[in-house]
Length: 631
Image (cartoon, rainbow, N blue to C red; front, side, top):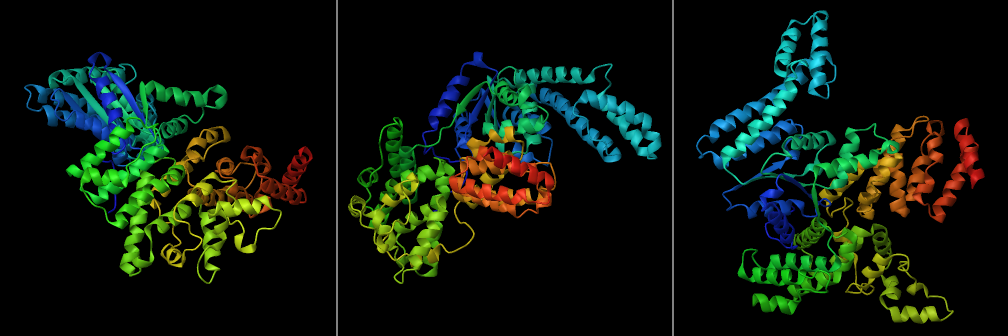
């Protein structure tokens, strides 16, 4: 079974508690109008919560829910008018039978058409004909029309004057303040529309705002401001607040930290979102239960009584998520009245075994957990189709996949160690898998035998230490079939998620040092594999944009990535050495203290600075010498 990578129709994570709290909050009309934020990382389950809220009102005749996904309109239609039209369309669909409502809806749509026409004609009449960028506000636009009309004759295009006249009529002039009038009348028509609809509340669910490009995200939020303080209206916005703050910073690029730029981005979001709800990452116990429920779905129909009993049991455990709890094989068999096969029992056992390592590796992200399982099931299908599934044991495969996904460097060490042995067994793991043997060796002064050398330094890596303890022990297992199955060069796990996370981090790492510093929490969510891919991209961009005193694009972002992933520091230093010295500015000498360099990387940087001291690039040489003097 493969699990779909979209919002869940069944609540496996007890998110109903969040949706119920929001519905209860909206039940008091005195709290309306209100704006609510559902915040969480990509894949945390924000869309699922929105669906639960929508389902809660399905039988409520006095409530209309409007689902708006601004990402769908990106590049196709203006987000502001798209939101207005979506609200009107859904109201008409739900309330068209009410007497007099159609007339109110038609009147309101004329106001929406005004906004749409104004922007469309403005873009065509000004930008297309003259190359002059469209002004940012309607007031600026009206002034620009007067100027362009005076110059229209010199452009030798008869249609320009005609189109600008049409634009002028649409927008109005500064004297009569048509814009202010239109917005006031727009709000009045909206109030009439809600009154005619005879509803207690209009709930507008805005999804995927954090997937949009900054301009689309800002346009949607600006459209929301028109409705925020309108009666009986509630906005529920599902978005990662880090990405929204990034959009605000991009929209107001001249706000420096010195004048409160970072604070402004936070204030902008807090002004828009009055009540925030944050979806926390799953803890180790919740991850174990989530894995067990996903496996239960593969053994029972999701709509069956058997699965519902298992789900009810899981929810009773999740009422105290801080307490240790699980779904055991015995409990599953008792609840479903099924006798599991040995390989099905093994799946449940694996869920409890891999939960700690998987939770740590995915940062408790449900989407990544699901994609990991999908990758595991896909590989089993590949082995079955190729005719060697009998050589693959599920518990061995999933343990190796954990290492491949979350510590690719250690995976490569294990692979080379195993394949260097004619038997294909990683005997070097024995010293770690048999702690009694290791303690005996540590208690003596004798050297560790070559066959018992420590393959990994688990003292410096808690994740590796936990991974080694996962059953089964691998030191006496022939791993050649597994490495053959996992031999593809393109990373198999969560490729779409990986690309999604990398794209998101790439946006955040493009700015100045102060802006980039705010991206640390997002960068830390990357796996080491994703971080390695991202560093390759950053180095390419640094190399292609360096050429003088100006700091190349993404240099500050690469420094932050080095801070979060120490093993990438040498890679960045090597990437910079490949840039011709004549293209390297003083930027390459500074900023390294923010990366918190390891001892090895510090030595490498010192040697690099010594080389630059002899460079024909005099500015670089002088800066390098000054840096070495400081130590």
